[in-house]
Length: 359
Image (cartoon, rainbow, N blue to C red; front, side, top):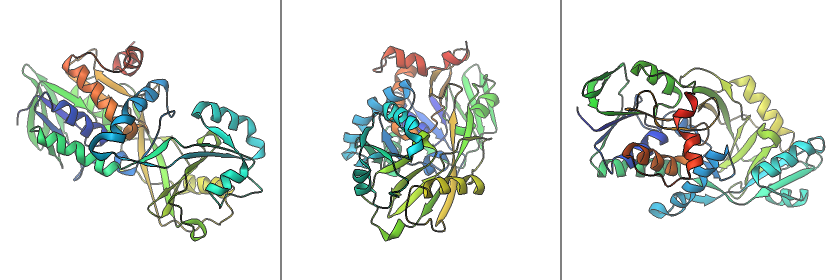
C-alpha cells in the first residue's frame, strides 16, 4: 500500500501529526494495538497548565491553548491547580510557587476548595486557576476524523517488524507492506526501537513508568469542583475524575517499552504521602494502572527531520506533555516536513529539533 507519509504510532502524538500532515499529503497511520490511544495517551492525567515543563514545552503549551479552547467547540473545562506544603517544606514551596506561577493563598482558602485537607499538617498553599481538564478522547477522535476526511487511514493491529529505506523511499512491514517517501516516528516508548529497526541512530529516548490509583471520593464529598492538588516537588498529586479521585506518587522510574502496570510499593508510598495531607483515610483503590512517559535526555520533545536521515521524521519524547502540546507540536511538525516557516519562535523550534541531540 502506497502513501506519501507513513506515521508509526497511534497515540495523541501520532494522531495529531497525521491529521496535520494529511492536509498536504496522503497519510497512513500504523498502530500496533487494536485501538488508538492505548498506552500513554489512554492513561494521561489530561490537564493543561501553561507553566508546566521546560521553556520549549511551555512555548508549545501557549501555542496549543487557543486550539484546545476554541477548535470544534473546545476541549477544555476549568480545573485549577493547588500546591500544598507542610511547615518544614517552606523553601521547596517557595521554589514551586515561582516555577509554576502559582499565587500563595491561606490555609483556610485551600480548605474551602478541598475540605478534606488536614488542618494540622497543611502550613502553606498556592493556587492557580488557569489550569484545565482536556477532553482527551474527543480530541483524539477529532484528529482521526480530520485525517480520514483528508483521505488518510488509521490501521490498527499493525506491529512493525521491518523497515527498509530503498531508492523509492521507506518500505514498512507490519503484516502487509506499506511504502512512502517519508516516515514519521511517533512510537512513544518504542520511538528509539523504531529508529533502530529503520537503521537510524536512536536519540536516547527512555520510557519512565508512572503509577496511578483511583479511590472513592474522600468522605463522600462531591469532588467535581476540586482543583488538582500537588505535594511540593510533585512528590504526589490528586485529581478529581468522574466522581472519584486519581492519586499518583508522580513516579518516574526508567524502564523498557511494555504494557505498563503499577508498582504496588511505589503506589503505596505515594498514597502515604497523600494521606499526610488529608483528614479522610485512604480507602482500598478502585483500580490501579500505570503509563509510560518517554523523555529525551534533555526532557523536551523531539520534532522534525533527522539530520542524518532527513526522510525519517521524529515526533517523540512527549514525556507527560503529549496532550497539552499536541495542537502546536503537530502544526510545527507539519510545517517542518512541508518546508514552511514555522509559526513557533525560532528559539523554541531549535530547542525541539532532533539536531540538538546529534551534536
